Amino acid sequence: MKKIVLVLLLASGFGLLAQDVEQDKEAIKKVIQTAYVDGLQNEGDTVKIDSGIHPGFNLLGIGKEGKMWAYPIEKWKASVVKKKMDGKLPKTGDDFVTVKFDHIDVTGTAAVAKIEFYVGKNLTYVDYIALYKFDDGWKMVNKIFYKF
Image (cartoon, rainbow, N blue to C red; front, side):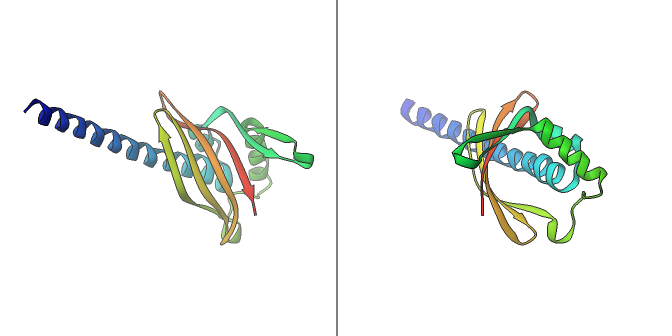
């Protein structure tokens, strides 16, 4: 009888963990959609950007001769604000950005999301976004990408 109770307790615990992971995945999708896609890419809304992107965030890439570069969120936000002031945002039509979530992996308070990034109908990037869960929720902390 004790073994059955133990098995039931363990099974219910695993069920709760699975439910928590699914809730985290949905929260991560919302953060990426709101802060990155809507705020940073399509609207230039700094409130949305700040809601889901950590101030220490860096976009990381590989440049000429295989040298890595980093683009901090503050510089990226400044360029987005300028685009908005210049009338280049919000985006519409063929320039509108959408994403498809390929995979989200969550381990405790760390996660990675793999997404397909579309400009209009064109697959333009595959993004790998790293996130941490803070007291106020999930925040994007860096991104690497592959450009087609």
